[in-house]
Length: 217
Image 1 (cartoon, one colour):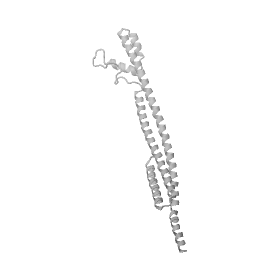
Image 2 (spheres, one colour):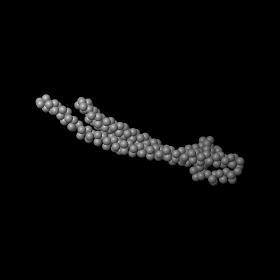
Image 3 (cartoon, helix red, strand yellow):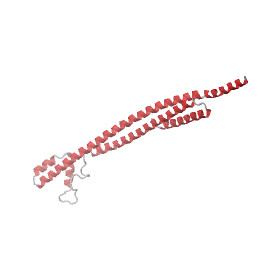
Image 4 (tube, rainbow, N blue to C red):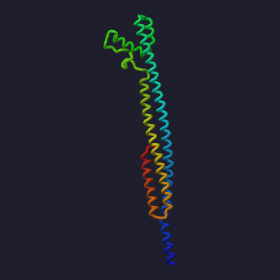
C-alpha cells in the first residue's frame, strides 16, 4: 500500500508541475497569434503605401521627362526662328526679319532684345547668341527639376515603406516560431526539455515584441 501511495504521489507531482505550463502556454500562444495578425496587417498597410509612393514616383518621372522634352522642342523652334531671322537680316530682308521677331514668344523675345542691347555685331565680348542660360531659360526647366526632386523623395519614401513592411513580415515569422515552440513545450515529458522549449518561446516572443514596438505604425 505504501508503495502504491508513493507511486501515486510521484505520478501526481509531474502532473501538478505541468498545470502551470498549460495556461501560461495558452496565454503566450494567444498573444503570439494576435501579434502575428497585427504584424500581417501592418505589413500589408506599409506595402500599399510603398506601392502608392512608387506610383507617384513613376508619375512624377513621366511629368519631368515630358516637360524636358517639350522644353527642348520649343527651344529648338526658337533657335530655328533665330537662325532664319539672321539669314533674313543678312539678305537685307528686314520685313522677313521683323516677321520672325514679332513672332518670338515673350521669353525668347526678351532674350533676343537683351542680346541685341549688347551690340553683338560690334562687341566681341557679347554673348554668342540669345539662348545662353543667363539670357534664356528653357520652358519647363524649373517645373521638371521640381518634379524630379519630388520623384526622388517619393522613391526614398517608397523604399522606406517597403523596408518597414519587410520588417513587419519578418516579425510574423518570429511569432510563428513562438507558436511552434510554445505548442511543442507542452508535449515533452522531460521537464528540462519542456522548460527549455518554453523559455525559448518566451525569449523569441519578447524579442519580436521589442522589434514590433520599435517599428512605425
